[in-house]
Length: 366
Image (cartoon, rainbow, N blue to C red; front, side, top):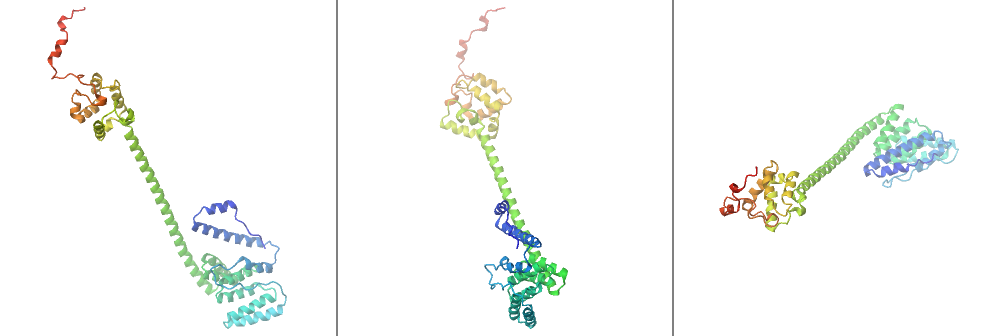
């Protein structure tokens, strides 16, 4: 008997990371490979076919949800071949008459009387299948095929038994192999049935795979969309912070603003032209430079009004501010105070001209 093949730990760890359905599929495939390898290794084993057949009871056990009775005993010892021959003849007659339970009992006595052949195990398996014990039939067929791998009868009965318990893939393999050795009409019908079931299962598996792949694609698309939205929100927040608040300390003009002025500046920032203009580094630097002395510099303001980039923004600001920006004569509360009188006004008292010297009184210095 060959030793059990253990799954490497690395492979077991990888399988554990799979989904439950995928784990079952992979483990089933590995079990089938182990069985094939064990059969191949058995060719060079020192165990006798009879010893291996006796141990096969431990290799194929009833499932927990199976109601089958225990498997019938396998050969252990005995050399009464005459008794075995008589029992086999009696079993064959009972089987021909449809008494499968009686035939099963006689075949079991024959197995225990002397070393059985592969055909004897196959005949008992046939009776087991007829009385509704497919797993026990598979066990007997396994024993027969260890003794004679080319037993068409054992392959056919095992394939039919596997079909009965829903193992359609394994049934296809056994039935196909049996038909290549010895064609059988009933086996052909079973093979057709298993082929149709195989196609149905493949379609179901493909559908499940497509559904899982669709879920993964949708999840990836949702993640990408969320990332893009997060980037847009971050860019919008950065752009908002990059305006006057991002350049001037405290998000306001030097000197601070009263509550009303702060609300007015908030309204100004809602104007797309003003908001866009204040994003211009040159405009930001000009505004800071104009306010560097603690209040607006009239001369600097007049100079900036001529600048093609700064001037339109300042003009737009003055239009929005309305009366407060008119000539800047009254000055702005807080930060922009101090401009009163800074800019000449046509309505000023002409008496101011008396303080200026007469140009005719200035001597010619040439």
